[in-house]
Structures are given as structure tokens and as C-alpha cells.
Image (tube, rainbow, N blue to C red; front, side):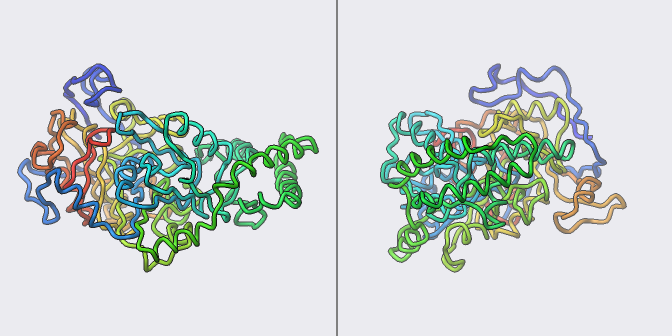
Length: 493
């Protein structure tokens, strides 16, 4: 049984800094779990420093960033919501292009400008706040035009210029409002086995893409054939789902709407495969921003509780049209604990009030949907699996400050079968995931506010021990450590 107790109340406002468990704690909380837990091993309070660790300083930041390869990427290591947007926003100042390669408006990246103003982005790459950066929406992305225009209007109204700074691939598929309706109808059909999607229409749009009757951005340039293509999609949906309202009036309205959209989108449309590859030839620096994360990958995630694209490294090449040999450094973004939204396996989940404490301390509510995220301890077994698949050169550990009130912190370091046999990799089968036992290590907490720390050596010793133990277990160095939501709340290690 997991146990959190004796929290210190530091702050009565969960939205203020430092982030705290304060008002949500009323005595010791015992965390219930749905499955057996292997007896925890306890790390000693004095740990041997990891060979991957180095003493950090603010001056290391620039050298860390400038050492990144010409084509680099930022990808999620868990089930999404790790804080990728913040790192992309920071790194974008040193890159010429920031590109999205997969997913759609189901991605929710929250970033802050220099004045601390919050921006929630769903389709527009997180490099948009850096005025010298060109933002590319690649061919692997599914694009909901009403949502894209709403984002652009919101940015422009807040003084962020988008003109000439956003390119949308002519090969990207269009996501229509009816895809969102179909997404909801499909979830209703599944009843208790529902996936827990964002209902943004991502899956139905990718389905049309794969069965080869989807509509691409380039089709907006040929309005003589557009109505027939849209009629086919809408007729298929009406035939498949009861209650799907479709008739000639619907088609007429949609076509007229997309004629207006086509006119507005035209300045943004480009052959992004050519643009990106020419930029590579010209030695320009390109940063790829992943949406979602590897544990939601259509092939490698907790299928079928996954997204409909490839948020792992392979999706970069197919989603932008670049050769594997040009891809260099990949930074994996991982929270200091674990969260996931929607249904599906979650081996290290903390149930009940304990999970609520972590959720409110970290303000774990979806950027895209507002749904409360499920919370749990950091899953090292899943992290190692993600590192193996993606070949990360470094990690960004985010939200370390959220754990500051805990007297002790657990790490899920290994999986075992019910008979005690070690499980060497992340299981593919849902039944295996539901039945496995998690082996934990317990590390001491630091119980102090770290949100103002900017130098790695100034972190409490036990916080450094936690970071270095993660490095040791994952086998990948941690170069960036988030200690708050702001741009400046980042430690370079």
C-alpha cells in the first residue's frame, strides 16, 4: 500500500507558487491501489552520485541548447501532458523552424511569454511566441480549420503576429466538425470499454486517411471536386451511425463554409516537405515538437487506449518527410511523477485522496479538455521502455517542485508477474498490465520550496538524489529540470 503522510502546509492557494498540497490535506492519507505491490526497497539518505550527473549553473543553459543538433526533437515519455510546450518555447529562440509532425488539436501545450501571460496551444507549434521562428504544421498532422483560425485570432489579439510565420502542409488531412461528432458516437457505442478520447475527432480523421478517402489541405484548391469528396465522407458517417444528421442542406452549408476557409488558409498553405528539406540543406536549425507521448503511440502504447498517430521518434520522419539520417538529438520530457487522461492501464496510479492531493498540487487538469488527470508515482519501467524506443540523448524532468511537500517519494522501478518473475519490458497485453506487480523504491523527500532555485547545486541534497536516481535507472542524463510553470523556472544540469 502506498502511503503519503505528514505533509507540510506551505500555501493555501493551489494555483499560486510554490505549488502545495496544503489545503487538501486533513490528516494522514493512505493510498489504495487496485493491485498488489511488491515490498518497497528503501534508498539510503546518502546516495552515490550518478556518473551521468554534473554540477549545473545558469551559464550552462546556453551551451546545452547550442550543442543540440541541427534537427532536434522534443517528445513525451509518458501519456502526454509532460510539459513539452515549455521546453519547445525556450529552445525555439535558438532554432529557425519549429514543426509539428503528428496529432491534431488533441495536443494541449501551455506556455507563458516573457510577461507571464498564459497561452494554450493545440495546433500552432509552441515556437510561435518567438517572433523569428517559422512554425510548420506538417503532413502528419490532422488540421481542424475552425480551431486553427481560433488559435491564430487569439494569438493576434494578444499581440503575437502570425502572418507569414505559420505554414500548413498541403498534404495534411482536414479534420471536420463531423469527425468530432463521430468520435462521440463511437465512444457511446463502446459503453464501458470506451477509450476516453478527447472527442476532437482525431481517430475518425486518421481512419479516413488510412482507408484513403480523406480530404487533404490541397483539396481546398479544387472546389469543383471538393463537394463530391465531402459528400462521400458524410454519407459514410450517416450510414454507419444512427442519429447522424445528414442531408443536402448540411453538405451545402459545409461547402460554403469551406470555400471561405480555403480563401483564408491559402496564404498559409505550402509544400512543407520542400520547405523543411531546403532548410536542412541551408543548414537552418529545425526543432520538432511532438504531441501526446510514446505511451499513447498507436504501435507502442497501451493499445487500444492510445492516440491514432505515432508520437514516438518514427513519426518525425513520416510526419515531416525528412530522412532518418538527418535526425539528431531527441529530448524526452518526463514529469517527476506520472499522469494520464482517459481510460487504460496505469501501473503506478495512486487512487483516492492521495491521487487528489497530487492532482491539485500539480494542477493536473487537461489543457485541451479540462478533464482531471489520473496521478501516480514515476514509472521507471515505462520510462526505460520509452528511452529504448526513441533513443533519447537527454531528458527534461518537469514539475519537480510539485513533490516538494512529500516526506518520501516512491519510484516504480520494475514490474513482476504475480509469481514474482521479473518482466523485462513493457507488456503489450492489457491483461498482463492489469495483473502485474510494481516494485518500488522509497526515497526521502526534501520538504522545502525549490521554485526559486536556478542552479542545480542549490537544490536540496535529497532532491538531487531523486534526480540522479532517475538518471541511473533510465540510463539517460537529465539536462533540464522544471521547477515551476514560468519560462525562467528551469534548471540546466
